[in-house]
Image 1 (cartoon, protein in one colour):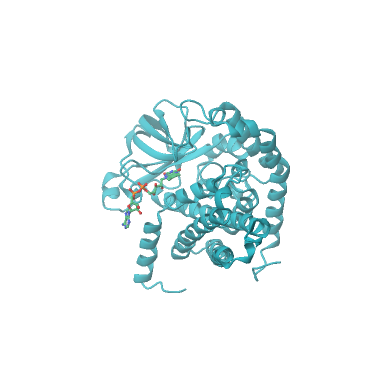
Image 2 (cartoon, rainbow, N blue to C red):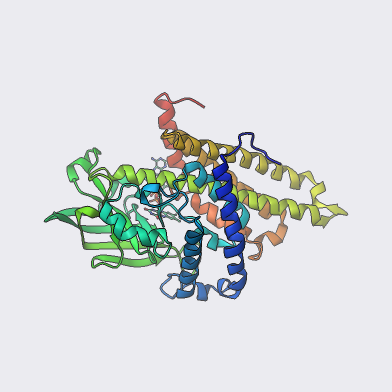
Length: 411
Ligand SMILES: Cc1cc2nc3c(=O)[nH]c(=O)nc-3n(C[C@H](O)[C@H](O)[C@H](O)COP(=O)(O)OP(=O)(O)OC[C@H]3O[C@@H](n4cnc5c(N)ncnc54)[C@H](O)[C@@H]3O)c2cc1C
């Protein structure tokens, strides 16, 4: 049964079916085969908190197999060698992947290029030289990258960043620190943001530039992996740049206009996280419905009790609304609108209702809801984090309010 009246374009349906078929054959069996490895945190992470070599190899295998099958870079622009599908395709494919795989089959995260870890529209304006040098490895999935914007004193207000690029001959020397940079400990390249014109940056007239750099050059240091939620390892890292030399061909987009690229990257993150929230919420809701139909208490299945089913009905209603909002915001972006208000609404709302849906699903499972084998708490953890990553709910509300007060009251 289709709950959404507007049909998706055929190429998006075909691409989504294709990538779902890919995960069925290339991702889910890899999880089954490596069950023992994934069950043992000491085998998943090294002592310094990075992924173990076995896990890095499996992630790379999935990326490369998906690139080979034509899915990995399907949403990357054609100018850098992708298939050029847009924001709507990106939203639909991620929502479908999270919905199908849940948090347990997490190698799925590498079947489609994540906007910050692989080829995406963020790299549309790299120079020809950077394209020749970095794109082959990013496109075939053998290499990955990270996105270094946040700093210890620049989070929600990322324009407060202190990383400096000081002119040295034709190029620049970069010094500074980044924090929370996802994928940084294993990435081959980093798109980082630094001040190239202090006066412009101070007066918020630009002055921040984006550079793409290999992570194995002198001056690029991974200081530590950050561990979240009691995990013994993690995916986020702290970086330090010490006189890191970059040349003009490494500038991404226009010099001094990098903050626009940063904000666009964050927009892609908001689409991704809206899709993640709805996808996980639907996955959890369906688990709860199955359980309600089979678990018995007081002489009947718990599906007979409105105390169990009404919260699930509310979750379904909220997820449906969030799904429509995500589809709408992504479509507006494809139509060339900035959709700042609509995308902020979609992300803030999707995260709240996705998180609530997972929480309700845990409750409907009773004690079973807390077991690792069901994976519900993994989704719960994941969506709790999404409430902060790519813009906290407070910052999204701030953005929505600013737009409304400026007269953008279309709803
Ligand atoms: C898992 C994870 C992955 C991440 N990955 C990356 C990455 O790959 N690259 C990267 O650059 N960054 C990354 N980040 C960083 C992320 O973008 C920041 O955490 C986020 O922007 C919030 O910044 P902060 O954590 O410094 O919080 P702060 O800015 O310090 O905010 C603290 C609190 O104050 C509130 N607040 C701040 N200003 C206002 C205001 N004006 N009105 C109301 N409330 C306000 C916030 O909502 C929050 O509740 C990641 C974060 C997480 C959690």
